[in-house]
Length: 514
Image (cartoon, rainbow, N blue to C red):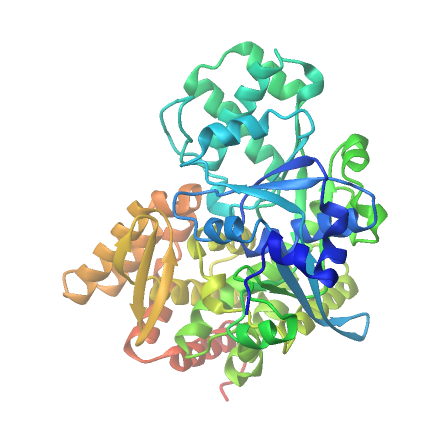
């Protein structure tokens, strides 16, 4: 069976017919990221616009880190791939395959920096999109260079904007519309501040800084779609499609893209005209519901569920103890902290649970666990901080989830910002900064050797500013609470920790023991 590529598409009339709209379209979007989500969400949307003759532009996909694994396949397949949508949409079952040809080419900036600079300076390229996870929107010091790519996403972006600024002599009409899609609150503002910090670090001048502020628009965005990526039963899909596709991506039909920006954004990226669920509006209300009632529950269940021998979100929903924990997390811990009408919260959470129960989706818990500490910090901690009083039953749900996260993070073999962890007899792919992984591994070693107690171990991790930044002070106060659940996990199992959680919440609520 042949692999999907440009030549295969041209030799197959059905595939050729699907890809015809994109054949000679200009490159209009520079995209930092080539992972499953951005291809199954952003690029899928560009494809829908192109097929309707609305946008008529293609995407340059850029590898975001030196450790990227997708770019060789992007190049081998000439940017083509398949998105399979499976689930229900407005009560109707959906199971369809969309050939995506919106990506014109892929560039590895660590090997093809000059090509990327030339691409970024094309006049038709007006939009930058990104999805580099929460870890991508963080600051790291690095040296200035025009000869090679910076390691960080904000660093590379600043370099490319500077080259564009120079190429057009600061022309105010040549700035970009920037759409960062990382799940970070006010992600556009965060990215802008990181770029300005790089300009200051590298002393790139007041004129460039003014051009950034006045000629470029950093939009706030919110993205929502469950994309599970390459399926473990890929052979079945290949038989159905008639070709091999190493970039095959499976997603749910549901999608929501909220963009907060000027009217110009809607003009140059008319997503709403393609019948897509896109809102050009303030992201605040959408973001609060989505991040707190979808992403936060994901982050609170993945570790405990995986350590309980479960592999996917769907399987989690079918496990009685984990489903009970998830229901309680949403009803008892999260929803009371959200300032929305009860009906709106209930409707949203019900829809989320229905999406979690999609039998077509193989949403692996280990995928949710990538950069798990960064996700806990941005998605979960802001909720925990809202709880008033030291003896509140809701606080126990957060402490139990955090204990699960600490038990999950047991790095064994570290290689840069990735590690293979081992806990509860399971191998676990971990991803954080190398410094963080090394520190966590050292603390586990000391605990297992008996050099430090469970309380000291927990306090050392929770008070570590490198891990939690300005949240470390708050977390340090939760040491005793978290350590109790962690001890139950380590000395017994997940079920014992969940039983302890039930006892503690009953006690704080003055409920009789069962």
